[in-house]
Structure formats: C-alpha cells, structure tokens
Image (cartoon, rainbow, N blue to C red; front, side):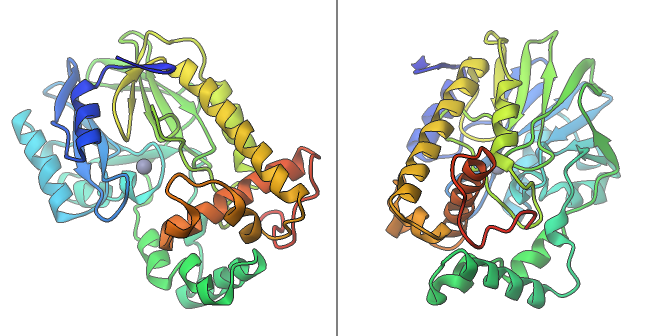
Amino acid sequence: MRNSSVTITGTAQREAWQRRILPPAEEVSAGIDSVPVVFPGNPMRYTLSYVLHDGDECVVVDPGFDSDEGHRQLLSALAHLDIGPNEITGIVATHFHSDHLGMAARLARDSGAWIALGKNERRNISVFEDAHEESALDRARMLAWGVPEARAAEAAMSPQGLLDLRRLPDPDRRLGDADILSVAGRNWRVMETPGHTPGHICLWDHDGELVLTGDHILPRISPNVSLEIRGDTDPLRNNIESLRRISGNDRYEACPAHEYRFQGVGGRARQLEVHIEERSREVLDVLSAGASTVHEVARQLTWSRGWESLGGLQFRLALSETAAHIRYLATSDIHAGVPGLTPGR
Ligand SMILES: [Zn+2]
C-alpha cells in the first residue's frame, strides 16, 4: 500500500488509525512485538510500544503514558507472550515525553528493570525550585511572545504540569551514537536524532533491517519540533540534521511510536525536510508582512484543524513550533527574529 513516499506495512495498524480504534498487538518480527498503549486525552490516542524478548530478556521500548488502562494493556500483551510483569529486564525511551517514558517508573518498580535514555536527553524543563514560580516565569514568556493576557495561563506550563514532568524517572543507562544495545539476540545500534527533543534516539537493527524511529519519523504526521524551556537553542536546525542522518535503508521496516509501520524511511525523512522548508517559507512571508510577535505569526499560519480550534497544550505547541521556525530563520541570517525570543531560553 503506497502513501506518497512510504509503503505501509502495518496495514491493520493503519486501518485502526483511520477507524479511530485501538490497533491489535502484533508480532513485527521474531521476538519483537508491537503493543498499543492508550494516551488518554491526546489526539495521538496511543503509543506503539515495542517489546523485545527471547525468553531470557524482555526490553520494552517506549512503554507509553502512565495510566491504569495503559498498564493493563501492556501487561496483558506481555502475558500473551508468557512474560510476567516482574520479568521485564530493561526499558528504553526514545525520548522523555510522558507518552514514551511515562510508564517506565511503574514498570521498573515492579520488575527492577533498568531504564535507558539518549545521552543528551536532560530533563532541564523540570529543574526548578518552585513550580508556581516557574509557571509564572513561563507565563511571562508567553506574554513576551505576544500571547494575549487572557490566554497566557492557558499557553504556559501549569504548576501541576511541571510537577508531573518532574516525576518522570531518571535513567540508569545513557545511550549515545553507535552504542550497541544487545537485546534478545539482536544488536540495536543507537543513532542520536535531536529535534523533537534534544536527546531523541532511534535504534537500528541492521541485520534484521528494522528501525525503531520513536517520534523522529512518523509515516504521515510531521512530528512537533518546539522551542522549549531550556531546550535546544535551535531545535529545528538540529532536527533537519537528524533527518539528513536517515538516508537509504528504504527496504528497512520502520517502527514508529505512533500511527503505523512502513517502509521508505529515507524518503519519508526527505519529505519531512521539504515540509519544514515550506513551513519556514510560510513563517518568513508572515514575518515579512510585518508580524512582530510569535503569537501574531502563529495565528496567521495554516493549521490542519484551524487556528481557532487550538487550545491548551495544542495551543502551546503551535506557539513553540512557530518560535522554533523564527529562531531557525534568525540563525540562518534570513530574518532578524522577533522580540521575546531570547537565545537560550
Ligand atoms: Zn510521542
């Protein structure tokens, strides 16, 4: 099945995605199973977790968002594979977002499994003394981005949201470029792919011609790249470089953390790069027409569900994605940027 640049291999997953139901847990290849874990209240709906197992070892990649329902889904899929909750030996998160790393603490507590993250995945956003103070600082930042007073609190990180981030576990292991993670008879080669987050990683099984892409490459959705609190200073530039690292290997089956499996990961990376360039041109046009704040630019861009429909976290992500584009244009010497985009913040 073709979808412009990619060939869809997870056809049951794709059908479920379109019908807005949960896809089946299924075997990707010997000793690799894909398990959907619910992501409540988010348009992504679920995370595709991958279970790497061989009877001795069981490593869960991207265990998903921490909810009782998601926990039941994962444990029941493991039970079908004859793996008990205390038999998980390791957990890898491609990045530190709550729909990937969220359930790691609960699984590790019950099993003693180690937790691994990319070596540059630092949770700087949760380094604060007082959640209320930090939230107020972030609200001020949203005002500096031109967000109207009435919507600044909606766009800012809430104290509770910040505390939730802080609860994500710290890793026992760090994975960097070219590290080999040997699990259940396969050798997974680590590739650092910063952009979606500063320390995002992909895992390649070159013998099995498989790649776990996390949220770096999805078959249809363009992964969000945001200028975040104490995140990368130029995340979009990093993301473009990370996309360029993905070339060839179009026979490989790509196993993303959302949507469905596909072949053609290199072509999809090129397509995402083109999409970013087009978006940057759109941002530049709006800036050139005189927009002078992040908010003013963002509301003039095209959004798939319409600007007016964006609320809460989606509103924040739209703003921080726009900010990432403005920063990229500024660091490319294409545009001077806008006030409120202080480097390093
Ligand atoms: Zn995700």
